Image 1 (tube, helix red, strand yellow):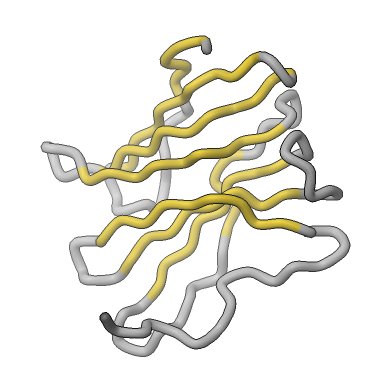
Image 2: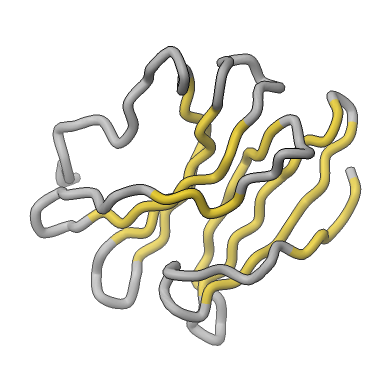
Length: 127
């Protein structure tokens, strides 16, 4: 096992008190695309959260500037993201939006340019 970087990927602050679960996928150029939930204004499970993405270099361990991939002001939170390389070589992302404490929705988005842009999320099912 190789240690990629001896630094934190995210900074925990009073404004961003928690970073949630994430996922990673190997890009065609050998770098790693990372996505995780960044909680805003609270660390509780139902605090607002947005999905952030960044690219990790395996050569030097550097992480690109992270950017917001999906924000959902109407949702309590976004979580449980999973990334996968699809059969057509595009990237797929599945994640949950928690609308109320008892209502979760599953969404799917696709990237055809190695994570640079993502399709509008499609609602897959209601839990």
